[in-house]
Length: 112
Length: 215
Image (spheres, rainbow over the protein chains, first blue to last red):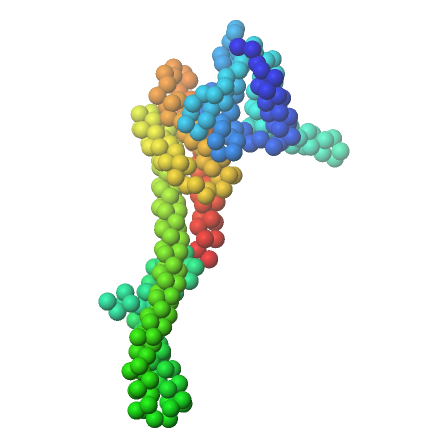
């Protein structure tokens, strides 16, 4: 499947919104899967398949509130899908906050 | 019968708690008395002031009793119409509030059940995790479908909880190798905690909304 310009715009906006901390990503019970919802109607799921395996791939799925799949894209359709997964993972796990805390601690140690 | 009259005679204010309106008007006969006695009393005073003589006054009434009765009937009709409209508005508001309360109770129940899911995950009872998570999912979807005036942020929170609960229900019955069970359970527990947190948030928003309507 080839990604349409609108699909590409959506992925780019999701990456941008995640980076800006505007999107609340949550880790699901499925391994390496994160979700965010919009307008109480749409859910975005980003998934990493076969993590650490020989052939790892990433996908983004959009579904409605009845769990019908509206759109599915992989990094083969649009390469930044992988970037979106990584951004969502960092946001859901508060990676940036953890890094900030560790850096602050290390810098304080150096000062005193 | 007395209670029925009292309900009709007291214009219901725009209060969401209709039961309070019904309770407050019980036994209130003053308006009925005013409506029945007031117009004849005013007419009698007017006739007395005009004729100073009951015979002449009675002659006037005898000649115009149809007009007098019509005017009285019209005023009673207008009053009853106003009261009925107020009562209908209050009943509609009470119905809406009752519906919101029912949905809140359902959400509270779902919130309790998601805690139970956590207990079953801890006990590695995967079938029960799947079953109870499925029940919570059905409740949440029903609430989302029926709660039309739920603010956008709350329905978003509920939808996010639904996605997490679905993932719990599906993952619980997925085949997991023995050495992966602990990791699997931890993942499920994390998702269960996030779902519980989201449900609590939605419940809080819902309660806030109901309280605002209550005021």
